[in-house]
Structures are given as structure tokens and as C-alpha cells.
Image 1 (cartoon, helix red, strand yellow):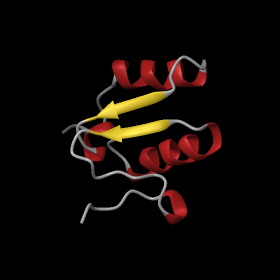
Image 2 (image 1 turned 60 degrees about the vertical axis):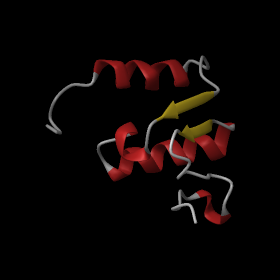
Image 3 (image 1 turned 90 degrees about the horizontal axis):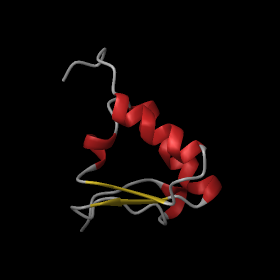
Image 4 (image 1 turned 60 degrees about the horizontal axis):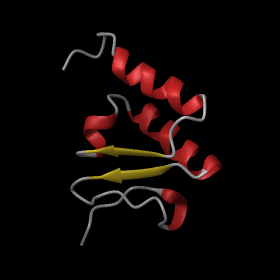
Amino acid sequence: SDKTKKRPAYLQMVADYEAGLLDAIVCYDLDRLTRQPRELEDWIDRAESRGLLLVTANGDADLSTDGGQPHPSA
């Protein structure tokens, strides 16, 4: 993937969240949500600060764990 490409749909999702239009984000896998580790950290911070529900189709994310970090399912 080209990290320099603009991502208009992703940027719109961020704007919608900042405007209070989103309560949850569903993605196939966390590595499909963001391209940079810092972006994922930003979403984790958002989830903790405003109660954003972040769900993955494969079930590998659980922001309710200690530290709020995603972890592999057992």
C-alpha cells in the first residue's frame, strides 16, 4: 500500500467522529483501519476518552483489556 496516498473516506470518518456522528467503528481487522501505528494509538485514545466502540470482524480487538490495547484472541 502507498502510505502517501490521500484517503478521503478515512479522513471523512475522522471528521464524522470529531463531529459526534459516530459511536462505533467496525473494520475487518485493525491493520485495515490505519496505515500508521500512531493512527491506531489515536483511535485507542478516542475510544477511551469518549467511549468509541471499536469492533473488528475477526474479533482480535478488545479495548476493554488492561491498558486498552488490542490483543490477539486466544
